Length: 144
Image (cartoon, rainbow, N blue to C red; front, side, top):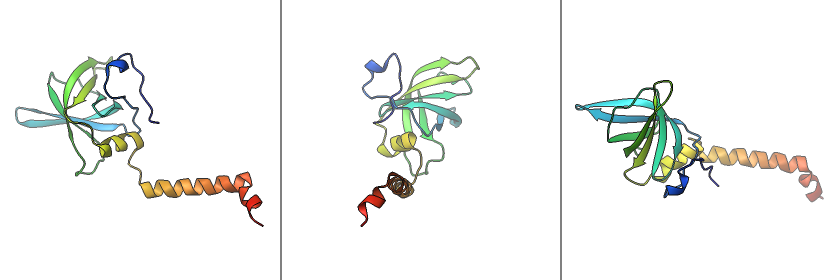
């Protein structure tokens, strides 16, 4: 089961919000034909949107682009509508974004589980299972 972020407005959402493992993201927008791109901290993500925190106040813009830092160039960059901007005590802001299209599986999995290699994860799990097997004595009991 995926970790679900808590919140007072969780009941009105069509998609559950999940707490990400991969928190380094970015937000970009266009002003007078110039693209502004700033780093963001991903607070939660769902199929339909995300909440991010940035160190500077966002201008009153209707839409942005969203992506994860370190993601391959071929990975999807999502268009999002800015639903709400809340100013933080330190002068930055928390922005609530609604994706204009459903969040792709690759991006959601990367945010929730990190950029791990599946084969490396399988090798690690196999090594842990073998170690647990040897510690519990199953190996001694099943051999003649």
